[in-house]
Length: 56
Image (cartoon, rainbow, N blue to C red; front, top):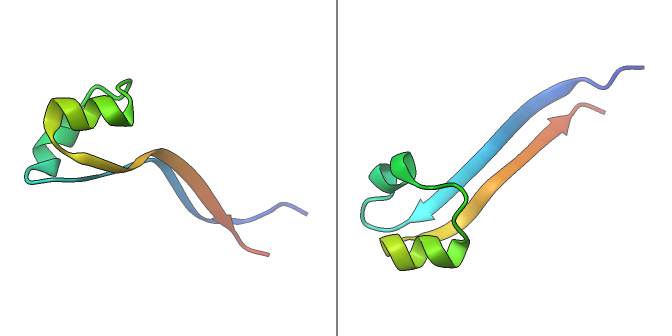
């Protein structure tokens, strides 16, 4: 029996700071969480997370 995917989310990022929308557009995704904070002043809450929810 095949598993039915209900929700799939890929490459999720969440930054906190005064201009997170602008920063995320130009962000080097290879930077570490510490490097992002040092270079931008923004805090990385979620970095490149992917998951899926399946129907049982």
